[in-house]
Image (tube, rainbow, N blue to C red; front, side, top):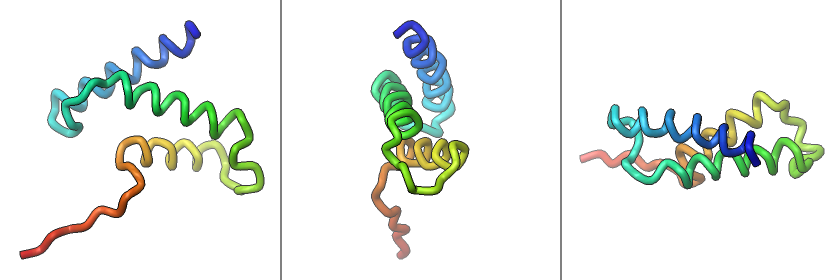
Length: 79
């Protein structure tokens, strides 16, 4: 629990920086920080993707992408 709390604080600080710069929405950083930690733990340590063939570095990129961008496709509107 101590390590998770320390990791959460680091991630929250990074998210706050992104919010201050305008690159991230201004929301409570606690929720996305915990989503990142818990989804990473699930995927990397529980064997949830056994047989998927992805390496830890690839999984890390997918997890971060889903936390930051969600799962919906982004539609670009043109006039």
